[in-house]
Picture 1 (tube, rainbow, N blue to C red):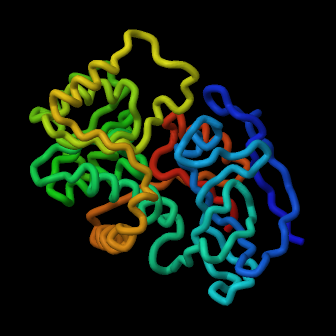
Picture 2 (cartoon, rainbow, N blue to C red):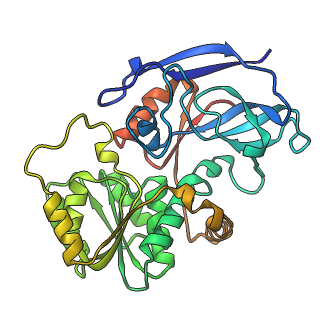
Picture 3 (spheres, rainbow, N blue to C red):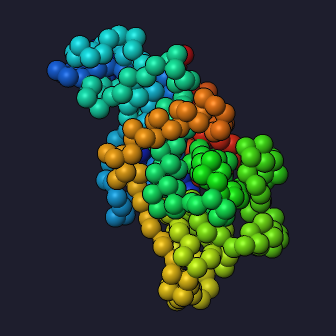
Length: 338
């Protein structure tokens, strides 16, 4: 009988997740039933949405249950399959979570071509983060030539793709990131301007970088970044709301006066479009276009990507904590096995 070493949710965090919120254990796996495959995890994706799944607050997806394996997309090698569609040794994209092995339904797996692109890109630029950027920006943001597109968390897998796609579409791309090294990287990616949100004069730098205002703001962060951006939005600006990572560990509302009136007044006065989205809503209609376009952009160098690879499942919790604090640089993946 196969076994897996897995990381489970031991308790729900209050504020920032700690090591005590998780437990590592080794358990037996069931034999694959008809239509299932036994997989060995090679790479595990770590993404901000996982913090929301640790909470039992109402959300777009069910929370991870206490004592259940933490969720996550994985690149895995087939060990055993009861379905002729897969053979031992095949590499697949699945959703095995934070563990060394998993049993999954073959119909939910996608076979990967290791010769076509690095396997990890299925978790990043050619996977969910890349598709999130593509679908959210083009469907909701609808950037036009000459417009200004601003994106926060711009060196992350979603933000970096947003800025580069905006430039491909003829728009001006302004990236917001944390720290001089990340700002320098945005310039290497071809962003027209890059700003450090940790700078004391961040709001002034944003104004200087957007002299004609902001037409599209791709929201990944919230918090003080959103406060500064709101004042720069043009009439008819579009705001795809993808994430609000600045508040994911919050345990109470921010201090100060209620500014919802200012927000709603600005939306009304400037005829803003503010639209939240989950990328799965666009998958049925846009996946084929995404794969074609993004693969082409990667091949001809119009889109570049960066990965932050952590070695070993035992470093997953620490890496996830760093992700929520902005310590990662690029798409964060855990290498679980060779």
